[in-house]
Image 1 (cartoon, rainbow, N blue to C red):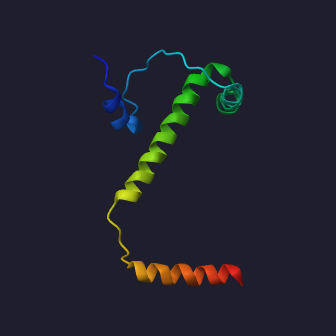
Image 2: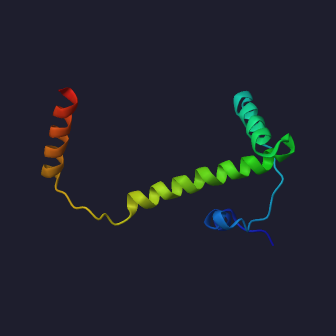
Image 3: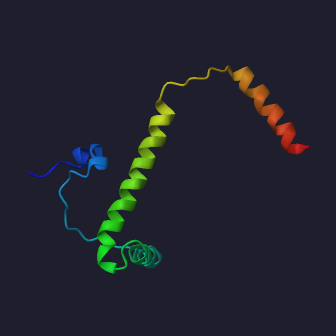
Length: 96
């Protein structure tokens, strides 16, 4: 049986999800970039689905990495007062 969307999202890096045929509407500029990228990577437009999957997985993985970074335990500790002092000094350096 097919995987649920959440299962697919959790194993994106493994590539274990079944392929699904679907139709999406692309803006002309997005379509053109997808064609160019498919030609660049695979020398054919028949690989557009593969390129689209690779790009989408990369984008989702990148978003996941950012969220993990945001919500991970922070190594450095600073107070609001220390941060404001740092920000003020940095701002002064940019202005000079």
